[in-house]
Image (cartoon, rainbow, N blue to C red; front, side, top):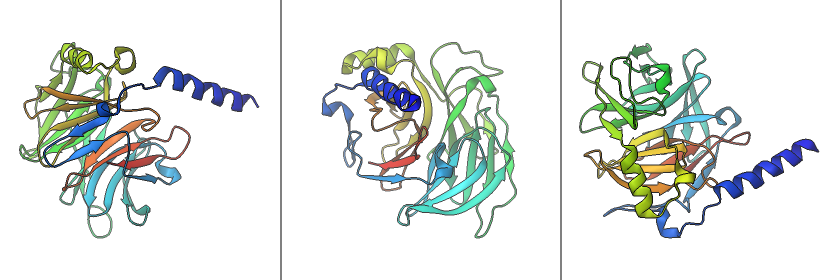
Amino acid sequence: MGGVFLLGFYAFYLFNIYHWDYVDSVYQVEFNEDSYDLKHPKERWDLPKELVEISGLSFYRKNQLACIQDEDGIFYTYDLKKKDIIRKDHFGEKGDYEGIEVIADTAYVLKSNGIVYFFHLEKEGIGEVSAIKTDLKKGNDSEGLGFYKEFKELLIACKEDPGTKKNDIKKGRSVYSIELAGEKFKKKPKYIIDGKSYNKMLEEKGLSKKKHKPFKPSGIAVHPKNKYIFIIASVGKMMVILNPGGEIENLIPLDPKIFWQPEGICFSPNGDLYISSEGRGKKGYILKF
């Protein structure tokens, strides 16, 4: 009985704290060829129990997404048509794995301490697991991993400390990069989401600072057509869209009734947007827009 009361109180608390009263247009993302309505997903997939804590998402191949969860070193292949996991590959020990990106047939997996593991996806099993070390540290809480095809770079979004072991940055949220050629980590951030610019955009769009601060990135992806950078945050319930020059182009709130704990984001080559969310005790799920 007590558990039911607490659950009811928690739901009441969330509804009142996070009750969105924005107009529908605030949730719209419009481009020349693509538009996304983050208030109304086109499809939803409820995931098996082992992906209740899904923490990373990547497009793999037609009708298949790559997933990881933040406790076990397992690469999951999820089939959107079959609505089920069709393959599991163990690549590492238990750990806090937060981001995934598949490029051709090579999988890259980000750990929260900034180490990136990679391995080849073979017909059966995976190849040797290697690692790219970076200047990132535990305090950065690296959570998002994306791929900027034009630069041939992996992008790493940091949830916390914007600085590194060798680069003292005090303010903002940083996105670092790794050149795939030579597996070279770049010491300076590729992008910095400046707090003043973020606050200014909140004001311009009439969005609540109380609801959307602090902004702590949990996922990152690059749009395949216009090359804009999409960064989502569970803490702050926000999607920040950067233009290719790194300036904030748009802010789209993430309604907590739709996005319980959004941590994974990716695009299909034709521009379909997928966002995954942890289940918070229920089933994890993937939404398509």
